[in-house]
Amino acid sequence: MSNPQILWVDDEIERLQPHIIFLKQKGYEVTPVSNGFDAIHEAEQKLFDLVLLDEMMPGMDGLSVLTKLKELYPEIPVVMITKSEEETLMEEAIGHKITDYLTKPVNPSQILLACKKILKGTEIQKEKFSQAYHLEFSKISYMLMEPLSHTQWIDLYKKITDLELKVDAHSEMNLRQTLDDQRFESNIEFGKYIDKNYLSWINQEQEGPTLSPDVIKKWVKPQLENDEKTVFLLVDCLRYDQWLMMEEVLKDFFKVETDFHYSILPTATPYSRNAIFSGLYPSEIEKRYPDLWQTGDDDDNSRNRYERELLEMHLQRLGLSNKKFGYEKIVNHDDSKRLEKNIGRLIDANDLNAIVFNFVDILAHSRADSRVLKELAPNEAAYRSLTYSWFKHSPLYNVFKTMAEKKVKVVVTTDHGSIRVLHGTKVIGDRDTSTSLRYKYGRSLQANPKHAIYITQPELWRLPRRGVNTTYILAKEDYYFVYPTNYHKYLNHYYDSFQHGGISLEEMVLPVVTLESKI
Image (cartoon, rainbow, N blue to C red):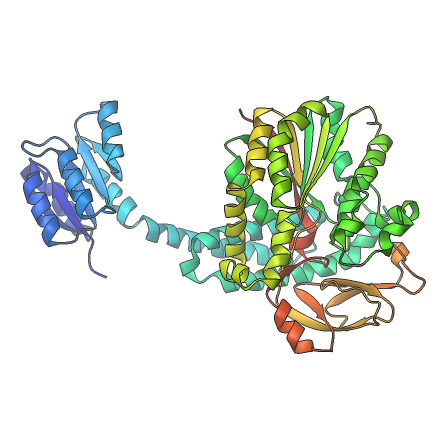
């Protein structure tokens, strides 16, 4: 690689020879000129990596030279060197898109630092990131060698997600496969952990994480007891990494406090979301609403048609029956626009507004069937980016801004996440077996026990019985169930899609975010 080329423009350039020699010793090639006209001439003849430009020169001053240089090379980095510290001058220089500025007198170390920051900053950042990445990679590997508590699993998932976002910013470093392998290994161990501990959590035999039925009690009830107007926003199928994309946009409006809960199993809307709104486990809901579980397996709207009633009973049990509440379910763009228009009125009218927002879930399902969406979001990084782009331009973003202006407390969470499925596994069942890809229930179910958890006694897992011989199976890691009939057709169709219902960090470990207005 050739040495970086620097054009240094100063009417007292002869006095700067020690600085120039110092830069050359550090591996930079410097072309010195003493006026703006020569600077433009040199720039027309040769491509430079950086310009050091004196602001006050006779003839053509620094700002005039800067304008001409930017006309030739709009992206060329320029460091303005000036004797003046007037704010208006600095603003004018910044308006001309200088990269940095230094105030005279400058010493060789200052010049070197400015050059290195601009010309080698990315390279240095890559080197430091690579070192930090391998250190974090080692930390995660060591964590997986020891038994982890439910809080430590949250910490591990946060570390993996943080690394993923950093790898997104350094995609050219080819670290993705290593991280994907580590995430898969983490989900193998997480599946073992859930298999070992989940039953004792839900049957209160040992202390565990906050699960779906306790979300409202833990995070919404205290706000209402303090007479805080509150919005409880449940974004269906929102993963932690996707929330971080949304948080990036919202942090100018809100103070953000992030916590986590675990979804109950299966990590699917009829189970986890009903549990959140009701404060009950599915088997308890079945006793009160036995027809809830008699509808078709894929009809989530039918399965969740009692959310308002479940929430009302939940609030009564929590001693909050005196609080006025509203409930809104947003399933399409027209609903979003209505919410955007009415959110201020809803906040004024109610102590609590519970809002279900379905777009992210729709995005996950649509990507499996849309070639265009798969091309727009071919991988995890692009999927996150698509979430960010949608949110920034969505009515929901404006709803958040209104909530900040109203100074209402906002609790944001989700019922479950999703995982990108990359391994198919065969399943056998009768014609009445449910159709979901990450969990199934029915009679005579057969699947590879390495890839799934069998539930032969639903009542122990606090799940609906549905029938005398009902069995559930839940996919582990990133597996998805495919029937032997037309196996390869459906294996290829659902490969690399985002699914939910099974056991993974992405589906089970979910953010609960409390937002307080900064405005």
